Image 1 (tube, helix red, strand yellow):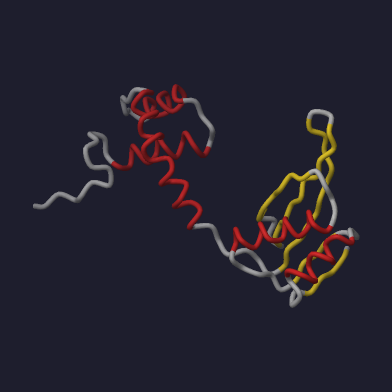
Image 2 (image 1 turned 180 degrees about the vertical axis):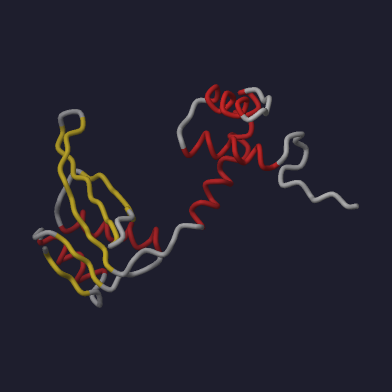
Length: 159
């Protein structure tokens, strides 16, 4: 009988326990002590220091896998910006959401002009590598200027 190759060679705990503890820590923002207690409830005795080491060693790999699994965004994107104050200064939060409600990207900038809209469009397209068929925005004219330059073939509707 041959043993399966371990996902985490050199570790005495099974891959399922290591994966579960790293997942708990990162997805639910639990403390190391909370993860230790949750595993203890399931009958697994592990120290929080072990969980910490696993999170340091395997956390980045988990993040890469989750990003790869990200589904393709929808064909219609809704773009909006809202103002907010950070330390008393006025800033704008630019946000893109697809028709399913999945947040595609956010960006905080201190301007709300055409250059800021172009920067947001470029960042959005670079991160997704996918162009929509239609974008829906509010009445801000900066979106139209940025769309004409960066996404001329995409239909634009204002709500």
